[in-house]
Amino acid sequence: MNDYLTTNRNNSPYPHLLDALLILTFNDDVSLTQNEDEQIVLASLHHKLTFKAVQLGLKKALFALANNGATLEEMNNWVQQDRGEFIVLKFYQYLQKFTRFGWLCHSVVAKGCLIATAKPMTTDCQFLLATAVAHNQYVLSKFAYVH
Image (cartoon, rainbow, N blue to C red):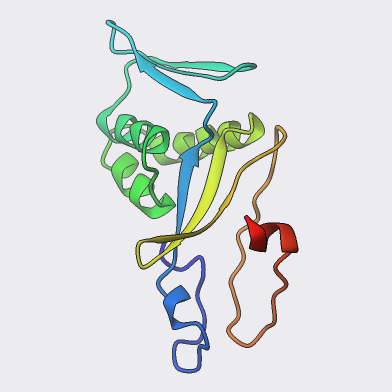
């Protein structure tokens, strides 16, 4: 969604962050393979998920997560095009499972430039989405600044 980092557009001291996107991707240790039965297998060192009879929208979202990533809004739109009851709810359950496994990275991108990426260091790493407020002060750690 484009509103993860929303601020007051009239007075923002950081106009380049007004159109920032939150991009979700899989962690580097997650592999995606598709076998001859059209099953999609996601695997890491400690977890493995197999998806059978994957519809086009979910397939597109999984491949996006495994490659360059996508916004939650984009993936939601793709999955909504699939048929079936509760398909979007099931997709959000998958995202929660990916989070519990420590598979999801969250990247902030503004004007095509990567600003920051939050990579899970443990399983069940929760990345809380918050709205940035234009006139608040934020502290960036020295570690984050250097890296």
